[in-house]
Structure formats: structure tokens, C-alpha cells
Length: 261
Image 1 (cartoon, rainbow, N blue to C red):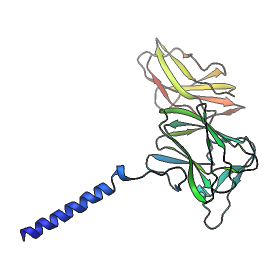
Image 2 (cartoon, rainbow, N blue to C red):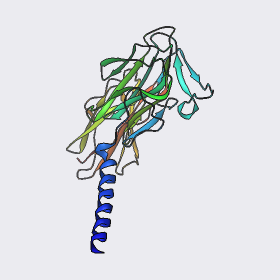
Image 3 (cartoon, helix red, strand yellow):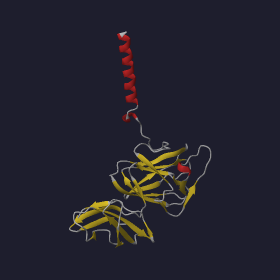
Image 4 (tube, helix red, strand yellow):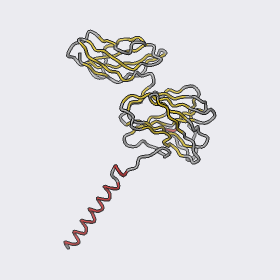
């Protein structure tokens, strides 16, 4: 009786150990370039190609083509056959994936430029793979990154189905000011942010509660460094954001910066 009990306990322990090993995070293989990924993996979030913060140049169309076996994220994708057509956006995070369909007649020398560094990628392949990872970049420094995706071949399809970034990341328009920093002084705070190329002006908003900005100041297009907010109360915490106005349209706001003069 005791022997049987020991045997059963041993078998149960062995099964439990097998389950823990088989399904431990170290044993779970992450998807890789060329493989289908219809939903983002843990630690990622998916941005649709039609996101309002994605900026496409001329020469793009929108595909909602439907046939058996053909699958697009949220039912549509942007595509182009024009050489040099581009998509631009910014994001905050450490990693990025481009999701597309692998198929014949796809451009094989697409370029993606991240923070000024350009790499090539291809979505061309004999076997069709829907919602596949066609490009991946990991281990970027945590922060804001500028991205441009460009078609290199006229007459061949470049398509964008979706973009995956960190699940706690931020997907931003190219006209959004990045990396706002606030440095306190005596009754003042000095603001610095990365310039927006086409900005006509900037709008700084601030207040004494996070997300609630009661004061507004306009800065000229050349005033993105060492912009001083004076007449503040020493010992009071202030919260700041900045937006850019481009061709009469105000961008989304930057990250929130905090300082106590």
C-alpha cells in the first residue's frame, strides 16, 4: 500500500516537473522573420497600418482584397508600387516588427531607416505567408525613435499590414515633438525638446496637475532649446507638454516632463 502511494506520488511529481519544463518561458520559442504572427506576442502591441499617426507619402493605396486564404490585419493594408514611396512615424520603446504578407512579386530591397541607420528587407517569397514578420529590430535603447520605410523598386509591391512595438510603447506622428525635458531654476523652468523639421511654431502647455494644463505659451519654430517658462512658484511641481503646428495643424503632444522650481 505504502509502495503504491509512493509510486503514485512519484508519477505525479514527474508529470508536474515535465509540465513546468515544457511550458517554462525559456522553452517557448519566439516567432522569427518569415513566420506568420496573426496576434502580437507577449510584450508586444500591434499598430494597424491605418493608424492616424502613420504618415504616408504620395503613391500609396489601401487594399482590402479578400479571397480564400488571404488574411490582412483588421481587413486592410497600405500598398505601393512607386519607387521611393515612404511611410514615416516615431515610436517610444526598444523593439519593432513589420507585419506583411510574404508573396511573389514583392519588392526585395525595401529599406527601413531607424534613427538614421538604414537596413534592407524583403517580403518576396515563393510560398505565401499571411501576416508574417518581414522585418524585426530588437534591443534598441529605450527612448524615442524615428522610422522611415521606403520602397526601392518601382513596379513591385511594398505593403504595410501592421507594425508591432513594445506593449508599453507609444506610436507617434512624425510631427510630434520628442524627448521633452524640464530643468528647474529659481522661479522658472527651462524646456528642451527635439525639433520638428516642418514646424511653423510650438505650443507649450503646463499646469500643476498631471494631464491638466491650465497655461499655454507659444514658441517660435526656432525655439526648441532652452525655452524658459518664468514667474513660477518655487516649491510647486509643474507638468509640461509641447506640440508642434505644421501647415496650420497641431500635432499630438509630447511626453510629459515634470520639474519643481
